[in-house]
Amino acid sequence: MKKVITYGTFDLFHEGHRRLLQRAKKLGDYLVVGVTTDNYDESRGKLNVQQSLMERIKNVKDSGLADQIIIEEYEGQKINDIQKYNIDIFAIGSDWIGKFDYIKEYCEVIYLERTKGISSTQLRAVNNGMLKLGIVGYGRIANRFIRESKYVSGVNVEGVYGPNLNSLKKFVNKHELAFYETNYDIFLEQIDAVYIASPHLTHYEYSNKALEKGKHVLCEKPMVLKMDQVEKLYSKAKNKGVVLLEAIKTAYSPGFIRLISLAKSGLIGDIKNIDATFTKLVKGDIRELDALAAGGSVTELASYPLLVIVKLLGSQFEDYNFYSYYDDEKNVDLFTKINLKYKDAIATAKVGLGVKSEGDLIISGTKGYIYVPSPWWKTEYFEVRFEDFSNNKKQYHKFEGDGLRYELAEFVSIINSKNLQTYKLTSTESCMIAKVIENFRSGINVIKI
Ligand code: CTP
Image 1 (tube, helix red, strand yellow):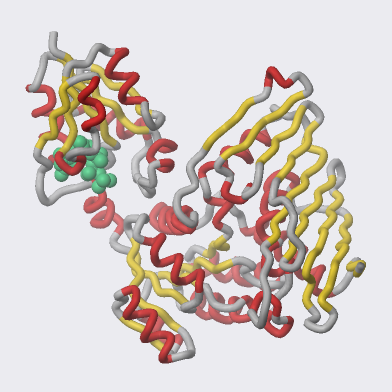
Image 2 (cartoon, helix red, strand yellow; image 1 turned 60 degrees about the vertical axis):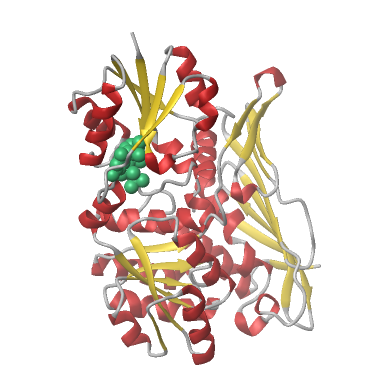
């Protein structure tokens, strides 16, 4: 008996899929079809798959063409499957030509002509429409964001808004965008959603106006520097039926999501302490060190460590203080240790623009701890460690590119799902982060060293 195997996501099953399976089946007597898991798709950068694994398996089953369906969970699995199931032929669409030649060592490899004019990506765009996104700002993060947006389907960056005409023109040419605009109202009329990547102190006004006009908002961190402003923005988003999301990329990345659910699972017992550090040395006349632009270590960097703290310990801390090393001339904090006391746990976040430290994360529990080495905010690798180290576990995850693709993918996905919110970063969690930053800026419990 000749056995054939093929793999795919099979999202929104279409004629291209059916034709591929038909031809693959004809190559032998028995067809095995591997369907990818959501996790595997995410890790290989295929974001925004619309149907669940169960639905996609059902698609393949209903085609009546597969003799056996298996699940593809990890990179390198194909070689194992081919040996395990005694496969004679590996068949795949011609969009993969050459990519699977390494399999020739194990079985015959056949690339089948791809059906023209149809794909899951196309169907997703037809179903959901293409989200027209505009960017506020043209700085470093805006540039990175555009590069990353190419990895997310269902969204297109159309234009950019900012006050400086020369910078706008340069930005539009560089990224081949459709338009630029110096009038915010006219800018908003041309888009469905906005990514706000301007200086901190402008976030509130830009977000507020965009929400008012019924536009979805993805706002760079820190979204705003006052808790009541975050609350106002979220309630406006709710009233208008649109999405408001804070762009803390870590919150949406696959490794971090796994880390949080594992820490919450009880595997390390009750969480009693968190130590999270993020430092980035900078120099010169830059926004990060400009007090008038709300610069400083806490406003620039604290969103990351506060994210992990609020995810694991919640938003109801009982007491807090800040130990801070200031540049007195510039009036910005160059290093700050944030201490939060909860009813049953404590947490420390260390952030520095003028002091360097190890950027790791330790989550300590009554049964063990989780160690995430620097850069923990990318969460590519972590270890769960116990007194008896033979029980230790290691996990590896992908964090593709700059990671901004994950926040954008989540943004697009909750807009399309009409859910309008996500468990990955809730409004309550965003509010808590703003509250800590606000407390620091108001000087309460700030002890200068
Ligand atoms: N395929 C095909 N013809 C198409 C689309 C897909 O032959 N028009 C093949 C692919 O080459 C692959 C299999 O179907 O062998 C499963 O592909 P999958 O990635 O699930 O489908 P796509 O429509 O290409 O999905 P996407 O747009 O998300 O990349």
